[in-house]
Length: 274
Ligand SMILES: [Zn+2]
Image 1: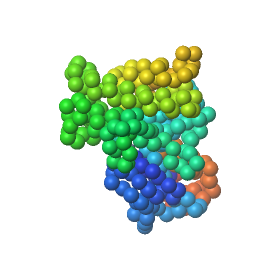
Image 2 (image 1 turned 90 degrees about the horizontal axis):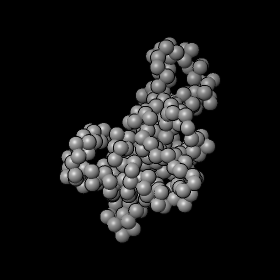
Image 3 (image 1 turned 120 degrees about the horizontal axis):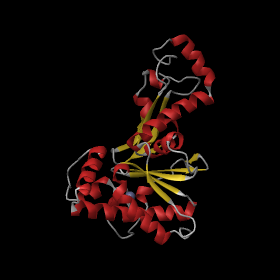
Image 4 (image 1 turned 180 degrees about the vertical axis):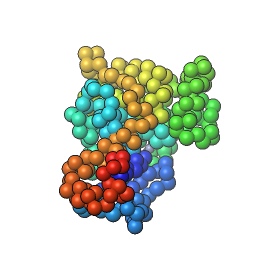
């Protein structure tokens, strides 16, 4: 095994410190410290083999490395309980000045709207997050895992359930409002609907496209492609694997020295690279 990656739906700092993951109830969780003594926490050439990163960022990297050829500048949105985004500019993940970019779920879409667990009001995730969509579809309190929730909603929408269709239309409109702001700011030509949004794309995409057409200044002559993630819910896993491999490629000496002496158990040459 060459390493492992942990995708966290929250703010992850250097060294794997999770500063805040509100939907997990995590605050200042030092993941490598929790794994002290485990082989994954033992540094190789000064770098631990465990990659801890924001889930939306890893999903965007997965789509960048293993998705279909196309735009090198896109927004990948992961829709679960929270909503995160990975911003890829010219083929490179844009993390922001301090590494906290992509918190699209807390862009206000109704400034005086519903209170959000972040302390703000009217945030996107209060209108297009999993809990909001389930509640609007009459499934409040269902407490379903993200993939199950998306499948349930897709089944209902596919069967023509009016509440599910209305819930997805409203969520898509809110999503389109937020996405339009990002596209206006960054001039992206592609928006990828990932995570729990991927199977719901047939219903979310039309209102997102409609809002982009209304709100993006350049939409008339520079269309924006809105599509589901090619990797679906596997994007973050693929992006995590790519991150592990990239670390080795960038600093191969330590890993090669370790692998030559450790056989196939910890960081050997015969196991899967991720
Ligand atoms: Zn918020």
